[in-house]
Structures are given as C-alpha cells and as structure tokens.
Image (cartoon, rainbow, N blue to C red; front, side, top):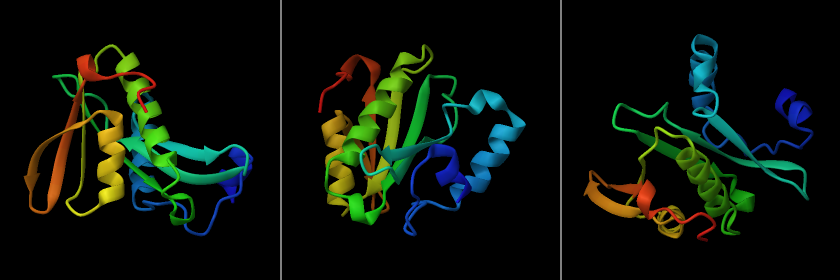
Length: 147
C-alpha cells in the first residue's frame, strides 16, 4: 500500500516478483546510499498506473566494472515486451555509468521468455551450469534502443 501511494500506482497481489529481495535492498541502502541506482527499480505501466515488475542489479560494479542484473514481471503482464523494455532501459542506464564495462545475467535453462529477453538485449550466452545459463553483454556490444 505504501509503495502504491508513493508511486501513485496500483500494486497487484502478484507483486513483488521477488519479495525476499526487499529486506536486502533496504539494508544496503540504509548502510550505504551509494547503492542508489544499483538496487531495486520498480517497473510501472504508465497507462494502467500499476506496478508490473522489478529490475535490479546485484550490487555496484566490481573492480573489473562488471555488474549482474535480475528482473521479473508479474504474470498478468508477461509476454508483452515489458520485460525486454525494462531490461534494455536498465542496461542503458548502467552503461551510462562510467565504471561499467560488462553486465551479467543468469536464467534457468528452460525459461524461454527470459532467454528471449536477454537475446533481445544483445547478451551472449557464456556458459551453462547446473541448469542455469550465464549471459554477458560488454559495453562495446551494446546498442541503445536495440529492441
């Protein structure tokens, strides 16, 4: 209810996509405000005025300029391109930050929708391990607005 009031959107019962992450982000942001931008982003549908998902980095860039991202869209808004649009925007934001040279993501081997989002964003599959696919996109291979 508080989030909906702050953003002036409805919040469906199926949101948040990853509720366990909120305590973690709250702790990080309270501990170190430099995590702003590298924590959780809320995906909203402007016309419908509803929270439809979330994207986040798994912390700030490491010493090599790499950062990992995660994302999720509520079931009732999946398969409409919103996940790809949100990930593309987040990736663009990250590459606009000077220390970022590469973005990593992972998905389950059989999650075709998530795989398609990463492919649309220009990521390359690096390795498959324990039922998970690991992906990477280097700054020099990113095409803004490439969807």
